[in-house]
Amino acid sequence: MANPLFSEKTFDKVSVASDDVMTMQGTLNKIALLLTLTISVAAVTFYAALQGQQWTSLLLPVGAIGGLIIALVLAFKPTLAPTLAPLYAVLEGAFVGSISSLFSGLAFMAAVLTFGVLALLLVVYQTGLIRVTQGFMRGVMVATGAVALLYLLTFALSFFGIMVPYIHEAGWIGIIFSLVVVGIAAMNLLIDFHLIEAGVAQQAPKFMEWYSAFGLLVTIVWLYLEILKLLAKLNRR
Image (cartoon, rainbow, N blue to C red; front, side):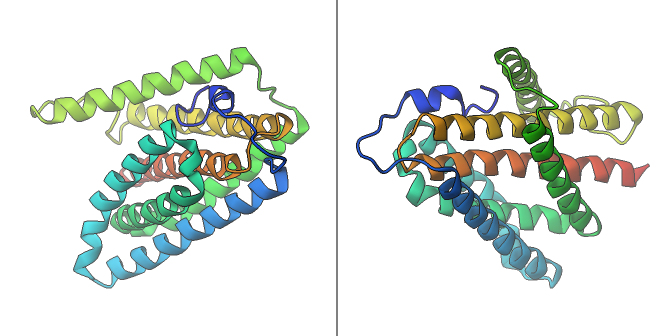
């Protein structure tokens, strides 16, 4: 419910047309493939940017805009996920690698922390330390929506030369804000795990393996960017 691209309603919109259904192993394979694509493209882009290759500067807007377009298309047409999810991973890799080159000294630590949080939250989910209930999902949905609206407002005001104070600065308010957003992104991982299990239990169509992997990748990239932003604020203090 928290990730607008990946929710319980996503599975309600699709129906099984054959015996070829979503499995946990199949979904894990797709997740591994998308992560490999994203990391590989990000690494190549990151290295090229550090070597002074000018073309890499174009990859930031191309990756961001292209990824957003694909995400919007998949939100309405999940059946296209087998084709578009790998393309999304490539575009996100270009975007992540390009933006990471601007924080070259922090990118590796941000990646390590991101996958550390991913592993920790997977253990938390598997052991049931945090139960993903309807109330939990509603709370995370509200928090995620609030962050999205705040970021949208900040972006809109910037066109008029108005900067929202504190939250994007390296002071304690900005650091605490980033910690909260990192926490919200991490909680979205728990919901993604829950939805993947729900899709398998409902025997969703096979293409939902790709869509579920795509939904999890969206959250992982968001978590990485928020951790990178937090580290940048801490580095400026």
